[in-house]
Every structure is written in structure tokens, then in C-alpha cells.
Length: 148
Image 1 (cartoon, rainbow, N blue to C red):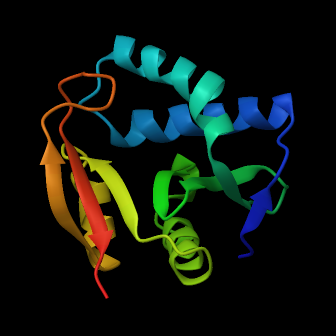
Image 2 (cartoon, rainbow, N blue to C red):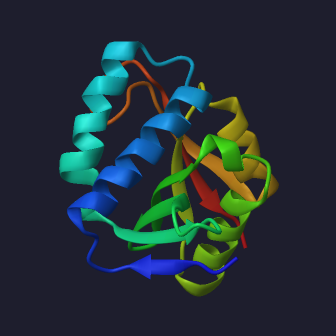
């Protein structure tokens, strides 16, 4: 698997990444209300994807299989297509980003137990917690750091 940086995503690529985001969120974030998914989808498509450096993995057909967004030493987002779950794509992205791009921090929804466990297996530890997410919604956020 080769991680590629997506420097200037096209409108179609941004739409495909947003669709992948939504499919992944629906499969992993069962604590989110449907209206919240619609709310966050708009933010992801119109703001978040354009504010990060994108790193992608593609499947054998060239479609996006997983992607990550980074800013500085922070992993801002990591999403894997549900049909690709359990195949090591998330691990591949995180190991690439921590090993080659200086990523040391990530935030995760506290209710997303699978993601919290995933990052713990990769050496991240909780350093603090916020009761609400950055949008002020009641979804607690864990702030994790990679310990040396």
C-alpha cells in the first residue's frame, strides 16, 4: 500500500472523499444523530477537507479506500471505507504519518471506542478531555499524544 499526498483535489475527488467520510462515520459513529451527520458532512466538504493536507490510499480500481488529513503535528481526520475495514489501511496511514510526517497528536470522539482502542494500540495515550466537540455538541473529545 502506497500513501499518496493529494495536493490539489478536484471537485470530484472532494465529493468522493466526503462520501467515504459519511460511509465510514455511519459505520463507526452510531452515537451521532442523523441530523448531526448532515451537519458535519457540510463542514467536512466545505471547510475541513480544504484546511488539511490530505493523504490517501486507493483501491485496485483507483477509488479512495482510506484518507487522512493532517495539520502540523496533528492528525485531524482518518477515515477508511467500510468495505476496507480490518485490512490495515488505517494502520498504514498512521504509521506513515507518524514515521514520515511528524504526526504526534490526534483527537477522537470518546464514544468511538473502536477508534480510541485503535490509537491506543498504536501508542497514543489520552492527555486531556473536552466535554463537547469543537462545534459545541455534546460529543466528548479525547486528546491523544504519541508517547516516545
